[in-house]
Length: 231
Image 1: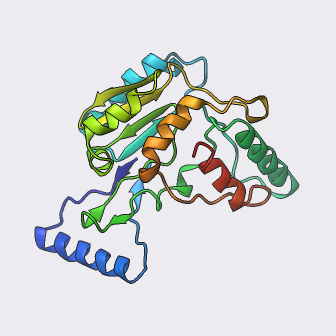
Image 2: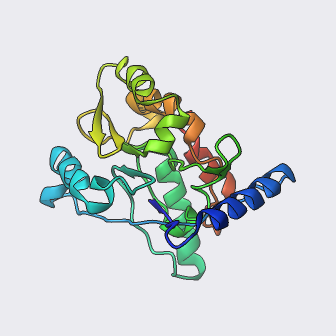
């Protein structure tokens, strides 16, 4: 995920923009800056679906290598069609909701659900704070996000206190891996993915607050339950 660029704005226009955003915040309006989301899916038999290869490839992306990203994540996901209609769509959504709540390591939703929720105005810094959507096997944090959590050394110390969590540099940010390979979990069987929960505890202050469901069998409350699964 990357924020819309500030390029082309003069210092005066940026100051006016942030002042207006702060005024809205003080009035109770939680203004969020839209962002651009890049989503790439690899089939499980693809060479880049291997965990080490995936991380190496992600770190080589220009967006990541330049430090221009705001946040990112990687792990297993369920693809689904959002434009089928009638009874088929409702049945699909019901099954999708049941699967991701039973196996919370699965990601599931399309990018348009999150583009306007990941860059809220932060009155502490008078600018926009890049959030993560939710903990996954791999989480990328940008420099501003790390600073909000207390700095690189503090975040690294908290995360690596749990064996199995690795923290690596990614340009001006960090890449967090919760285990050597992605996990899906299985709540009825007692597999709650403890490493994901340990990462989520540290990253909770910068996690997206709400998530809409697609409806028609997958209501907002079930989407929110999935979002909060590792809290």
